[in-house]
Every structure is written in C-alpha cells, then in structure tokens.
Length: 103
Image (tube, rainbow, N blue to C red; front, side):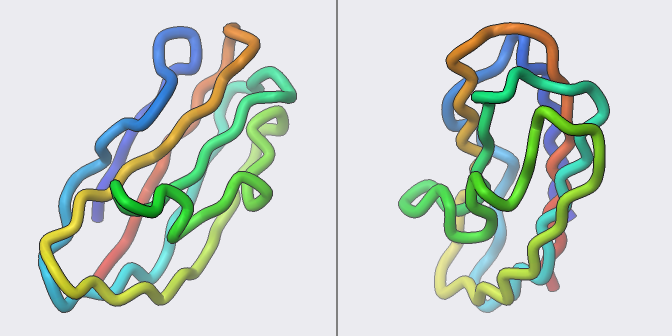
C-alpha cells in the first residue's frame, strides 16, 4: 500500500507516491477528501509516463468531502514510479489522501 497526504495550499504538480516492483497488480486507488477544495482542483493517479493510468480527474470531486474509489486492475511490467498529478489553478484550502493498494 502506498499513501500520499496532500494539502492543496502548498502542493501542486506531479507528486511521487512511491514505487511498485514488476509483476504487481494495482487493485485500487482510494482518494479520501477531508477538506473541500476549489471546484477547479483536480487529481489524477498513475505512472510517471501515464499520470492518469489508475484514476482520471473525473473519478474524484475534490470540492466535495467524501471517498472516491477506482479499481484499475493494472499490471506492472517493470519497476514503476507511481504519481499523483495535482492541478490547482485557484490556490486555497483543500486536503485529501491518496491510498493505492497493490498485490
């Protein structure tokens, strides 16, 4: 399991969550929104070469407190950097946690 806590008042752009070794399967991405963000804030989760491979921007509403889950069933073929790509055009409050589970 990989975890990234995000505070939108200080964080934007691609953030490394961690690394997954070869021949592993990403089974879920859970995003827990604990503090509402501006309506134009977005997050995607994926690899360093495809930042939305596991979760696309439409899968999470950062302006609404809640839990958002995707189940990508993505198999790694090599040592893979996992990133959250955060877009926050209107800086302000907003906090969430990304939890990626793989086996």
